Image 1 (cartoon, protein in one colour):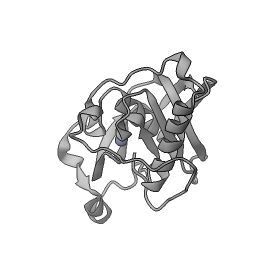
Image 2 (tube, protein in one colour):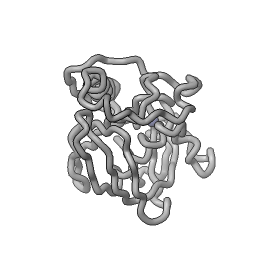
Image 3 (cartoon, helix red, strand yellow):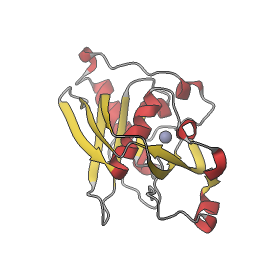
Image 4 (cartoon, protein in one colour):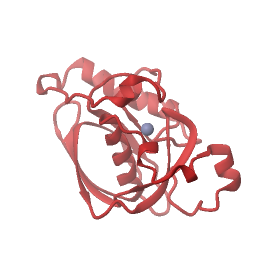
Length: 191
Ligand SMILES: [Zn+2]
């Protein structure tokens, strides 16, 4: 997902982000086999995802977005009045337990669909389970923006982009026009 006006550097390498139209964004990514946990390749992938996410002002980036068809994503949720900051985290082979209906409407953007925003209904709460790059367990209860980012990134592992989740194209906007004209800015947004 796209975030604005925020950069942070980490170690790791900045990778090229592929855009909508690249076939890797439309395939179901592979689980990371257990024997690859703790390897240099998986650690590097995690670091590169975090670095690239921050360099491009994102709050989430999935491995298929850098043309790696594996079930890995990085995310970060900036804190504000309503939400605690979630420090950058890399999740491998995530499993989501979604709670309630997918009826929480909010604005999304995507580093692979640059410049656009649209309204997407998501589950307001979920439980995320998976692994870190070393194979240690990751578990998080998430709600609000945190839950939205996790659903957006997990979709990338299944070849789904946010525009597929829009109930209609009526809310699709360029970011500049969103700033100028959107009358629904009170909805959750990722900036
Ligand atoms: Zn995305």
